[in-house]
Length: 209
Image 1 (spheres, rainbow, N blue to C red):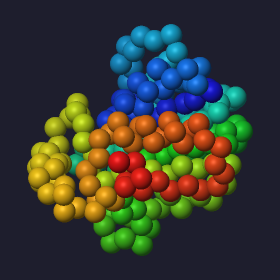
Image 2 (image 1 turned 45 degrees about the horizontal axis):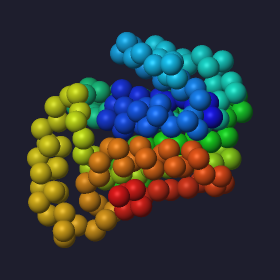
Image 3 (image 1 turned 90 degrees about the vertical axis):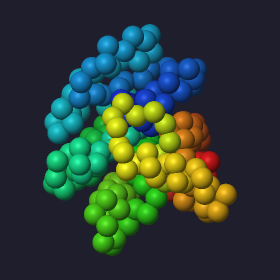
Protein backbone atom coordinates (compact mmCIF):
# COMPACT_ATOMS: atom_id res chain seq x y z
CA UNK A 1 0.00 0.00 0.00
CA UNK A 2 1.04 3.57 -0.67
CA UNK A 3 0.13 5.96 2.13
CA UNK A 4 0.43 9.57 3.21
CA UNK A 5 0.94 10.65 6.81
CA UNK A 6 0.01 14.18 7.89
CA UNK A 7 1.43 15.19 11.27
CA UNK A 8 4.19 12.59 11.39
CA UNK A 9 6.32 14.58 13.84
CA UNK A 10 3.71 14.55 16.61
CA UNK A 11 3.29 12.03 19.42
CA UNK A 12 0.98 9.63 17.55
CA UNK A 13 2.28 10.45 14.08
CA UNK A 14 5.86 9.58 14.95
CA UNK A 15 4.78 6.22 16.40
CA UNK A 16 2.66 5.57 13.33
CA UNK A 17 5.56 6.31 11.01
CA UNK A 18 7.76 3.75 12.81
CA UNK A 19 5.10 1.05 12.50
CA UNK A 20 4.43 1.73 8.84
CA UNK A 21 8.12 1.67 8.01
CA UNK A 22 8.54 -1.77 9.59
CA UNK A 23 5.40 -3.27 8.07
CA UNK A 24 5.91 -4.88 4.62
CA UNK A 25 2.24 -4.22 3.76
CA UNK A 26 3.17 -0.56 3.26
CA UNK A 27 5.52 -0.09 0.33
CA UNK A 28 5.77 3.69 0.12
CA UNK A 29 5.15 6.27 2.84
CA UNK A 30 5.00 9.99 2.18
CA UNK A 31 5.30 12.10 5.32
CA UNK A 32 4.08 15.67 4.84
CA UNK A 33 5.68 18.04 7.36
CA UNK A 34 5.97 21.75 8.02
CA UNK A 35 9.69 21.39 8.64
CA UNK A 36 11.94 18.54 7.57
CA UNK A 37 13.50 16.36 10.27
CA UNK A 38 16.26 14.91 8.05
CA UNK A 39 14.66 11.49 8.25
CA UNK A 40 16.64 8.86 6.35
CA UNK A 41 14.63 5.87 5.13
CA UNK A 42 14.31 3.80 1.98
CA UNK A 43 10.51 3.64 2.40
CA UNK A 44 9.68 7.08 3.76
CA UNK A 45 9.73 10.24 1.67
CA UNK A 46 9.60 13.34 3.85
CA UNK A 47 8.23 16.44 2.12
CA UNK A 48 8.04 19.97 3.48
CA UNK A 49 4.66 21.54 2.67
CA UNK A 50 2.25 24.33 3.52
CA UNK A 51 -0.83 22.58 4.92
CA UNK A 52 -2.96 25.46 3.75
CA UNK A 53 -2.10 24.83 0.09
CA UNK A 54 -1.20 21.19 -0.37
CA UNK A 55 -0.13 20.06 -3.87
CA UNK A 56 -2.97 17.82 -5.06
CA UNK A 57 -0.61 15.73 -7.21
CA UNK A 58 0.87 14.20 -4.04
CA UNK A 59 -2.39 12.35 -3.39
CA UNK A 60 -2.58 10.58 -6.72
CA UNK A 61 -2.54 6.76 -6.55
CA UNK A 62 -2.48 6.72 -2.73
CA UNK A 63 -4.31 3.98 -0.83
CA UNK A 64 -4.63 5.55 2.61
CA UNK A 65 -4.21 8.99 4.17
CA UNK A 66 -3.49 9.21 7.89
CA UNK A 67 -4.12 12.57 9.58
CA UNK A 68 -2.48 13.00 12.99
CA UNK A 69 -2.48 16.81 13.00
CA UNK A 70 -3.24 18.42 16.34
CA UNK A 71 -2.18 21.27 18.56
CA UNK A 72 -3.29 23.13 21.69
CA UNK A 73 -4.76 26.62 22.01
CA UNK A 74 -1.71 27.63 24.03
CA UNK A 75 0.72 26.49 21.34
CA UNK A 76 -1.43 27.79 18.46
CA UNK A 77 -1.84 31.17 20.13
CA UNK A 78 -5.58 31.62 19.66
CA UNK A 79 -8.82 29.73 19.13
CA UNK A 80 -8.78 30.73 15.47
CA UNK A 81 -5.26 29.37 14.97
CA UNK A 82 -6.21 26.17 16.81
CA UNK A 83 -9.23 25.65 14.57
CA UNK A 84 -7.06 26.13 11.49
CA UNK A 85 -4.76 23.24 12.52
CA UNK A 86 -7.42 20.89 13.92
CA UNK A 87 -10.27 21.61 11.51
CA UNK A 88 -9.32 23.53 8.37
CA UNK A 89 -6.11 21.65 7.51
CA UNK A 90 -7.55 18.14 8.03
CA UNK A 91 -10.66 19.04 6.02
CA UNK A 92 -8.62 20.49 3.15
CA UNK A 93 -6.43 17.38 3.17
CA UNK A 94 -9.48 15.11 3.07
CA UNK A 95 -11.11 17.00 0.21
CA UNK A 96 -7.98 16.82 -1.92
CA UNK A 97 -7.53 13.13 -1.10
CA UNK A 98 -11.10 12.35 -2.12
CA UNK A 99 -10.78 14.32 -5.35
CA UNK A 100 -7.69 12.28 -6.23
CA UNK A 101 -9.41 8.97 -5.63
CA UNK A 102 -8.27 8.07 -2.12
CA UNK A 103 -10.97 5.91 -0.54
CA UNK A 104 -9.54 5.32 2.93
CA UNK A 105 -8.91 8.14 5.41
CA UNK A 106 -7.94 7.90 9.09
CA UNK A 107 -7.92 10.75 11.60
CA UNK A 108 -7.17 11.20 15.29
CA UNK A 109 -9.75 13.32 17.10
CA UNK A 110 -10.45 12.91 20.82
CA UNK A 111 -12.64 11.26 23.40
CA UNK A 112 -15.58 13.59 23.98
CA UNK A 113 -15.69 14.94 20.42
CA UNK A 114 -19.06 16.61 20.00
CA UNK A 115 -20.09 19.49 17.71
CA UNK A 116 -22.63 20.53 20.36
CA UNK A 117 -20.10 20.63 23.19
CA UNK A 118 -19.60 23.87 25.12
CA UNK A 119 -15.94 22.91 25.46
CA UNK A 120 -14.17 24.52 22.51
CA UNK A 121 -11.67 21.69 22.02
CA UNK A 122 -14.34 18.99 21.93
CA UNK A 123 -16.54 21.19 19.75
CA UNK A 124 -13.86 21.55 17.06
CA UNK A 125 -13.10 17.83 17.14
CA UNK A 126 -16.80 17.09 16.69
CA UNK A 127 -17.01 19.55 13.80
CA UNK A 128 -14.16 17.91 11.90
CA UNK A 129 -15.67 14.46 12.41
CA UNK A 130 -18.99 15.58 10.92
CA UNK A 131 -17.31 17.38 8.03
CA UNK A 132 -15.29 14.28 7.13
CA UNK A 133 -18.35 12.02 7.28
CA UNK A 134 -19.97 14.22 4.63
CA UNK A 135 -17.09 13.65 2.21
CA UNK A 136 -18.19 10.02 1.85
CA UNK A 137 -14.94 8.12 1.84
CA UNK A 138 -15.22 4.42 1.14
CA UNK A 139 -13.79 3.92 4.62
CA UNK A 140 -13.34 6.64 7.24
CA UNK A 141 -11.62 5.77 10.51
CA UNK A 142 -12.13 8.17 13.43
CA UNK A 143 -9.87 7.48 16.42
CA UNK A 144 -10.88 8.98 19.76
CA UNK A 145 -8.11 8.59 22.33
CA UNK A 146 -8.29 9.82 25.90
CA UNK A 147 -5.22 11.43 27.52
CA UNK A 148 -2.12 10.35 25.63
CA UNK A 149 0.96 8.78 27.20
CA UNK A 150 4.38 9.03 25.56
CA UNK A 151 7.44 11.21 25.23
CA UNK A 152 6.61 14.55 23.67
CA UNK A 153 9.25 16.90 22.29
CA UNK A 154 7.37 19.75 23.98
CA UNK A 155 6.58 20.17 27.67
CA UNK A 156 2.89 20.21 28.63
CA UNK A 157 2.88 20.61 32.42
CA UNK A 158 -0.88 20.24 32.88
CA UNK A 159 -0.93 17.13 30.75
CA UNK A 160 1.92 15.55 32.73
CA UNK A 161 0.10 16.14 36.00
CA UNK A 162 -3.02 14.60 34.50
CA UNK A 163 -1.04 11.57 33.34
CA UNK A 164 0.27 10.94 36.85
CA UNK A 165 -3.21 11.20 38.35
CA UNK A 166 -4.74 8.92 35.72
CA UNK A 167 -2.04 6.31 36.25
CA UNK A 168 -2.60 6.33 40.01
CA UNK A 169 -6.35 5.85 39.69
CA UNK A 170 -6.35 3.73 36.54
CA UNK A 171 -8.05 0.87 38.38
CA UNK A 172 -11.16 3.01 38.96
CA UNK A 173 -11.38 4.67 35.53
CA UNK A 174 -13.66 3.23 32.77
CA UNK A 175 -11.75 2.02 29.69
CA UNK A 176 -12.90 4.84 27.44
CA UNK A 177 -11.43 7.36 29.88
CA UNK A 178 -8.14 5.67 30.76
CA UNK A 179 -4.88 7.26 29.60
CA UNK A 180 -3.51 5.52 26.52
CA UNK A 181 -0.07 5.07 24.99
CA UNK A 182 0.36 6.90 21.68
CA UNK A 183 1.73 3.66 20.21
CA UNK A 184 -1.57 1.89 20.98
CA UNK A 185 -3.43 4.48 18.89
CA UNK A 186 -0.90 4.09 16.08
CA UNK A 187 -1.33 0.30 16.12
CA UNK A 188 -5.10 0.71 15.83
CA UNK A 189 -4.62 3.01 12.82
CA UNK A 190 -2.37 0.49 11.08
CA UNK A 191 -4.92 -2.27 11.70
CA UNK A 192 -7.68 -0.08 10.27
CA UNK A 193 -5.65 0.51 7.11
CA UNK A 194 -5.30 -3.25 6.57
CA UNK A 195 -8.97 -4.11 7.10
CA UNK A 196 -11.61 -3.95 4.37
CA UNK A 197 -14.36 -2.33 6.42
CA UNK A 198 -16.62 0.16 4.67
CA UNK A 199 -18.33 3.29 5.93
CA UNK A 200 -17.65 5.59 8.88
CA UNK A 201 -15.92 3.71 11.68
CA UNK A 202 -15.44 5.26 15.11
CA UNK A 203 -12.77 3.64 17.27
CA UNK A 204 -13.18 4.62 20.90
CA UNK A 205 -10.37 4.75 23.46
CA UNK A 206 -11.34 1.50 25.15
CA UNK A 207 -11.09 -0.42 21.88
CA UNK A 208 -7.50 0.74 21.40
CA UNK A 209 -6.21 -0.24 24.84
